[in-house]
Image (cartoon, rainbow, N blue to C red; front, side, top):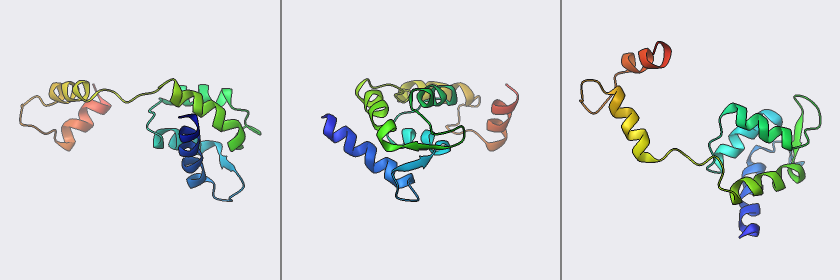
Length: 114
C-alpha cells in the first residue's frame, strides 16, 4: 500500500517538476496536494510546507522532503473532500428560487456580499 501511495505521489510531483531535477516551485505544492485528492485550505498548505524543509523562502521543494510528509497525509486520510450531501445542501440553500441552478449574479452576490 505504501509503495502504491509513494508511486502516486511521485507521479503527481513529476508533473510539476519542469526541470526534471526532483524539485518543484514551492507555489506548486497546493496544486500537487489537491491533484492527489486532498483539499487543504491555504493555511493547511502552509502547515504542510512548515513540515517540509523548503530550500529558501519562495524556493523549491525536493521530492525526498515532500514524499514522506505527503505519504503520511494520504495514509492518515487528511484533507478529504467535503461529502457530496453537504455540498448539495449548501447549494440548495443558495438556490433561493428552488429552480435547480444559481445564476452568475446570485453566485457573485453570495460570494462577495453574504
